[in-house]
Amino acid sequence: MLKKHSKFFESLLLLADWCALSVSWITAYYLRCYAEIIPVYKGIPPLKNYIILLIFMIPLWGIVFKTFGLYRPRRVSTKLSEIIDIVKASTFATLILISLTFLFRQDEFSRVIFLFFWIISIVFLCFIRVIFRKFLRFIRHKGFNQRYALVVGTEKLGQELTGKLRKHLELGIQVAGFVSDDASIIGKKISGIEVIGKFSDIRDLITRHNIDIVFITLPFHSHYQLKEVLEHIGDEMVTIMVLPDLFDFVTLRGNVSEFEGMPLISLRDTPLYGWSVILKRTLDVVFAIIVLVVAAPIMLTIAIVIKLTSEGPVFYKQERMGLDGRLFNLLKFRTMCINAEEQTGPVWTKKNDPRCTKIGKFLRMASLDELPQFFNVLWGDMSIVGPRPERPVFIKNFRNTTPKYMLRHKMKAGITGWAQVCGFRGNTSLEKRIKYDLYYIEHWSMKFDLKIIWLTLWRGFINKHAY
Image (cartoon, rainbow, N blue to C red; front, side, top):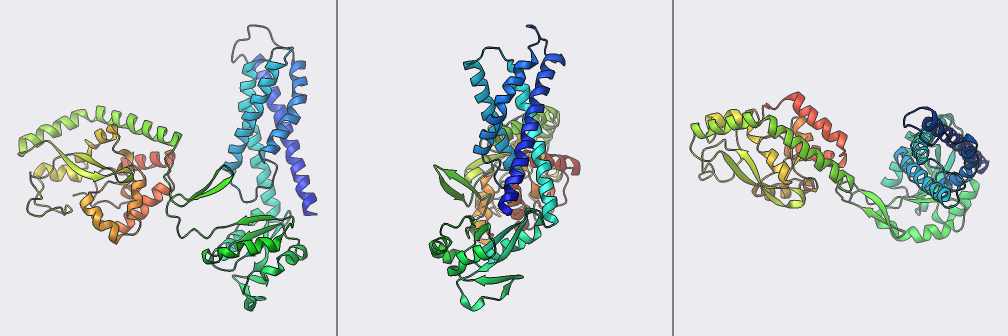
């Protein structure tokens, strides 16, 4: 019955896609020919030719979408992954169609119509998928369209999985029970789920409980049993999903990728790659130029006051650690007397620090001493948003006393950051700052950067911990 339901929903989705495809194609035709968005110089092509082409398009899109896996069950995948697959499949199918019309054409088809159709069809198809998924989740909440699963492994990972599956009823996955190699716990309940059999019972359990999915959640020390479990499953027609017990080792943006058909699990990675690097760098350069131009009169005034009120240079360079542990010279307005660390050695600034000049105290309190760091941004040493860079002399101690401290260097150092706008700046909890820095890296996006910039401007630059 479940297989029949699956085929029914697959057919329903295919029919909905064909409707969206037809509407998109006709809409693109009318937008090009009658909406006067772009002038028509060669006369309006007959609609009949485009209707005939649509007859060939419908099966083509069905084949391409099926090839891209857009009609397989996606109970545990994200909306974003499905949208990305729709864009890829639609682009591929459109390119095939354009190639065919140019190779075997008898009538000339408008390239503008193809462009309009490509954009409109992606929007319509994504909209239909969102509505369709919401409908499926609604009926699954009501107890329909369910799949039944076995969870192999009763330890922490298996318990977490069953807890999340019960929490997300919209997935429509019901856990029939645990499977364990420990015969002494058969019949007992763990986290509300009964242990219903041993590894050797799996094939019988699959048949008895109409199992559709087998989740293998063996702990790290029991992975050698994976082969045994797979042998017991044999050629049963079930979906098998393995959850590797590596989460204790995942420290930053863990993900799964594929290389030549081989799954690669990343335990630690940077969020900046591809277009992300270009977008973030563009924001940095544009924002830094704007700030330096607007703040030029202020910076000139500060430079003159520093020169008139104390001996020494206007600017102060200090070695800091940035992206991937590389060292660079951070530029600031000088706020202390020259040779300030001769007697004390490298120490953090404290409240009412006697080493600060009179103008220096004000500059530090108002964060104006950090304006020259926008030059560091232009030079590529820093970003507008990121973890605040620290001195190597302090880092030697921090990395030994604070877990995961060095992971903050997987992102370029910033003038402002998530920890700073949340109040953890200067002489505040180092553990809290690391927590917020790693959260920023883990959840980085351009939207997040803009939010932090806005909060920095909104809450002002004066901070009680800035001294």
